[in-house]
Structure formats: C-alpha cells, structure tokens
Amino acid sequence: MEYVALIHADQSVWETMTDAERDAAYEQYGEFAQAARAAGVLVGGEELASTASATTVRVRDDQRLVTDGPYAEVKEALGGFFILDCASFDDALDWAARIPAVHHGAVEVRPVHVDPEA
View (cartoon, rainbow, N blue to C red):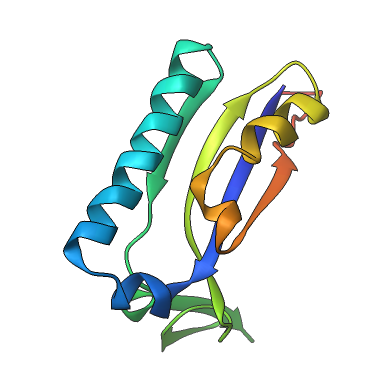
C-alpha cells in the first residue's frame, strides 16, 4: 500500500541556515532517499518551493478566486513529500521516522486513497 509522508517544518529555520547547514540537510535527505530506494519503498518525492511562491485557488459562486500565498498561514508549512510503498502502516511510520524533518518539524503520514472501482 502507498503512503504519503508530508514534511512540515518551520520555513524560517531553513531560511536562516548557512549554506553548509543546508548542504548537510540535503545530504541527510539524500541518504534517506537512497536507503528507501534500495529497500524498494520509495515511489517518489519532491521538495516544494517556498510558501512565498504559493498561490491558492478557490471557486465560490462559480467565480474563480486567486490569492497569493499558501492555503493557510501557519508556522510549520508543507515543504515536501515522499511517497512510500510499504507493507503496513507501521512500516510507513518506521520509514517516516527516518525522514530528517522529524528532528525539527513533523512528518504527517497518510494512506493514499485507492478507489476499489477504478
């Protein structure tokens, strides 16, 4: 079954890191991805651009409303995700606990919805 591991972190922490600290963090994420790929668990994943680049779209009364900025103003924003193919939810939680963001933010794990009729 596939699970999405949503990475939430305080964007201001990332923005105040030195280049060396950022490089070290990218190395940790790379090591996680390599281990998950080697285990046959990693389906995909990506880092997201800063929330400063976000645009939110809604439709109300058949009118499209476009707002600059993320869906919600929160301290810990969605910064990226991994899609993990695991045998169980517990396995997905074990892999999520290895994502570097767990040490300074949070990783939300959700099963990917499967439509039984599709």
